[in-house]
Length: 447
Image 1: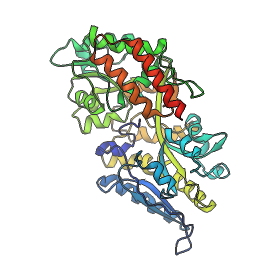
Image 2: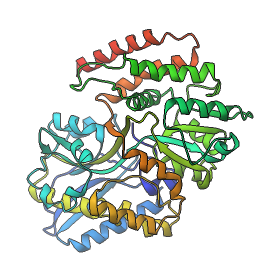
Image 3: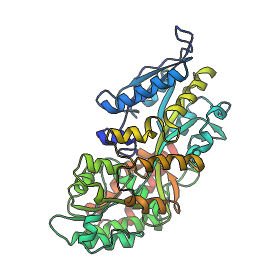
Image 4: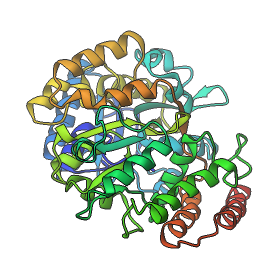
């Protein structure tokens, strides 16, 4: 799954994805003798501020590189899973195209990505990007893409409700047992207040089950990607905790089959204590759902073992010429990979337009590049950064695990497992996990 606001300014505008068009084209030279590249994921016209930022940054790039002509394409969303493969196969994809982390190996497997390995040394920022993110686009030792943003899951919580329930808002839960205890106390406040909410529909239940399984030290599939590994003590622990919170503690409320918007509405209205999400949810809670920045905080994933990470990046068409590949890497450096600058990193510009600055993610860089990015972010912060420190500190101790292969198909299976546990008090957890394991094995076998 993608997160729901990973792009800093689009979260402000309530747009959860950017752009994609069916227009491809790999003509190396424009009429003026320039190297031309088509790129996607340009903000739609409805996102006026982001559209203006993007156009401004493209114009600055072309001024700096007068030998390169950038032709951006916009539509909604950045990537439509229903048409993605068809556009690749039909030669309609842009020269430089947006992908989720989970797409990388698939695009390589169907031979639609250019090998960037001989050129990546020309990408000034490449060595500063977190290795675990670079590795996502590295297949069999070759580089096929460049990460642009990354997110990790954490526990968003309402500090005001914690105080009302007699909990310390500066000491959020770090284990699932502590989450359960806190949820019970918050639910006892009454008035329709829910201690903890979780998703169980539209594949989002499977997504969260995966995150919760990771947090317990488990995995959805084996390391070789060939067998399901949900029918395990860790898998049972996840479901038993949800069952007990729902039915024994009555801390999850009676309304189930929730999706992310439901949890956001509840949190924004001050009726929810905790739910799992990435930091990019925070501006949505404030700008769209009525919450106050001072009340919303985020902690690392409970359990202390691992957290689910996701994000996006760019790959280059197999048809691209060497000149186009070099132009693409220069464009990525300018737009997304210069600390404290560019479309996502110009924090001064974002602050001037009342976009949130100071959220703990995305955190793309390491070393001096990260220090510079964080310094500029801190200097322009307009949100309570202290509310996010537990998340930053705790993430340093967690393994970062990407979503499983065939994620959406697997999530659909696991949706049924989670929804059964949350809607049926007598749900047979062992049977649910055994059946899910068999279905996932079938998905993996089909490749």
